[in-house]
Length: 330
Image (cartoon, helix red, strand yellow):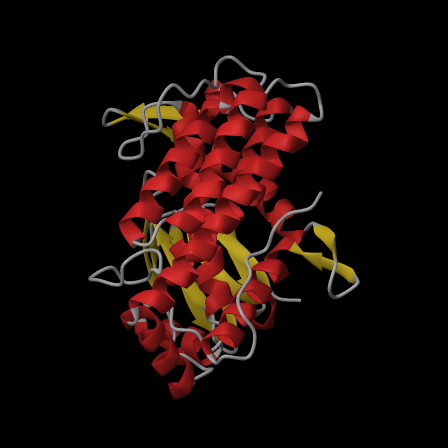
């Protein structure tokens, strides 16, 4: 089974005959090419065109992060599931305001519903979250009244602001308080964890989009402009609460991360190499964990759920079935 490989150390990644080899401070590691779906590279890694050609042939993506853990770009091999029809339909749904807003609203509805699901999960365990649940339910009720992308984005922002206020109640460790959501740079440990987790989710979704006929450059909630990819940002809104936020709640309430896993640099707070390794291990465990799927009547992983979400979107675009976002039911 193919899997994601993370490279945190410095070195060289190259082709060795018909397989892959990484040479770093810890020596030489051979990586069977048939076992790799993608690389996430955090260290200073050199490579050559011969490697890129090989990775393209093998349909392997390379995602790059800078020194501070920010996503900076992807080597996206030539699409192997070409479909002119789907690209035309994506563009048609983007250019038609009614069709675009219909999809954008679904992404926000899914995001707010899954935030509510997370809050109700912790409320059932004795945390007083009633005022926040009431506020999110009120915002959810207003989504159908709004008719522009800007209004939907504003409501999504309000929902997320109220939702983030609950983090200080859910997370038991007082060293990880969230007084304000800040991204560039993240000025607290919890802000850095949220940003890092969201980046991992964006690239995981980008990799899943590569396995469909969809074009990642055409989103609906996030405007298609000079940014390279936007569709993964749209779909990520649905999965952030149940994958990223649940991952960091688990890490912090189990005391798997502490102050020794962070560094302060350039007016920001960032995970160090050991901290990132702990986070990605828990993140991968979450993606691999399974839930019983109501429609399929079998267990499926969260990673596969993300791909199913994209297949549902394809069906919507070609008029086969109206898109409904994934709603967690645990």
